[in-house]
Amino acid sequence: MWRAASVLKCERACTDCCRCCVAALCACLLQVIAFIAFLWAHGLYCPILIVVPLTTVGNWVAEFHRFAPTIPVVRYRGDIAKRAALRDAHIPADAYTKGPADSLKTPMPVFVTAYSDAMRDAEALNRVKWRVMVLDEGHRM
Image (tube, rainbow, N blue to C red; front, side, top):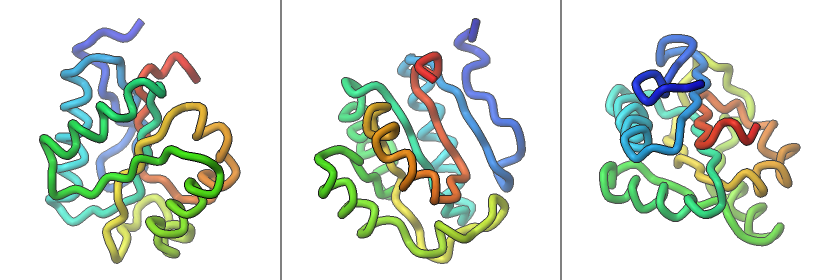
């Protein structure tokens, strides 16, 4: 069982691919935002996907605006056409080709989505070379 003190666990340094599992605690939400702000402060503009329960998508976006207002965030929700438009508008071409140790030339917004949308768009989202993936309520996997 995950304990609050060991919730945020990255398998490698921030210059490599990170997979994070996060429990549903406010402190962990802030740890994730701080970690992503650290990456951005060091010029590591990498594709970041945050997958959360549907009821908390708005909260995650609001907390990003509150604690890291300079980091762009996309609320990846809506019907099929809207989600496709969000992908086309916000995912740069190099996000599909860069390896895990490469930083993007242009900053890509952080994508926050619900588990249901991530599963519906798994094929499209899997084409992106996500460097950081955060799973709130990771037991949903």
